[in-house]
Image (cartoon, rainbow, N blue to C red; front, top):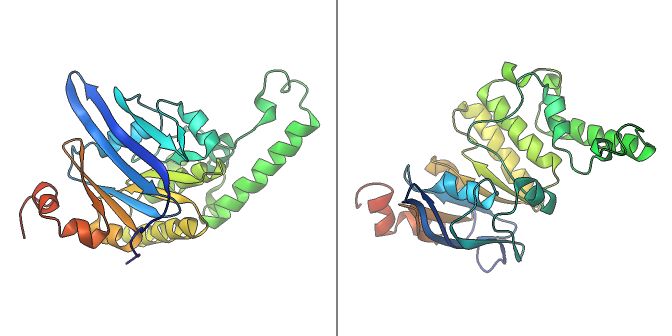
Length: 261
């Protein structure tokens, strides 16, 4: 099991974040910090607000109140593409994409700084645009190789298994050159062998300095991967700490496990 997060500085801070839907608080003053360079697990029972929180942090939803800070800067309500340009990206529980596009095209789509897409440069197809396109293609091929997707580069995403689609999700975030990735149940619906492969990829990315925050229901996986754990319940932060600390907490046992041990 990884060690405690200790005194690592925070890469992400969530402070008093509230989000209501039709008057009902899905998030009710959530607050915690994610240590830089570590893997943080975000856990809690169904309906705790975990996915809603990821949507707020990643800019898909604007909070009604509270603040999100990334690397010290206030990014509350910032659009997803602007956050990605800053180095904060995410994956989704249900893989997203364009059904008729190939794996390679999906990876290329998420490459940053594409001058060929600018209105004035696209018709001329400048040398800078061609060079950047070649750089992105090289990066896409390298990421596909790393994730063992090379044999599937020309395949449409509709032809992929659930686990392979999860790998494409990770691949497209890597195209954006992230410093932090939010992952919403990256192993959900994935067979155990591919799940173990995805876990190994996450550990390798973290070893390279990328901070990770993942929502996951598999406690064995959280114990294996995470240096730091945040527990949510009923739209609030219940407790934070190491895996052993949070599972031994009586409030967690009641709220998350449904009983005291």
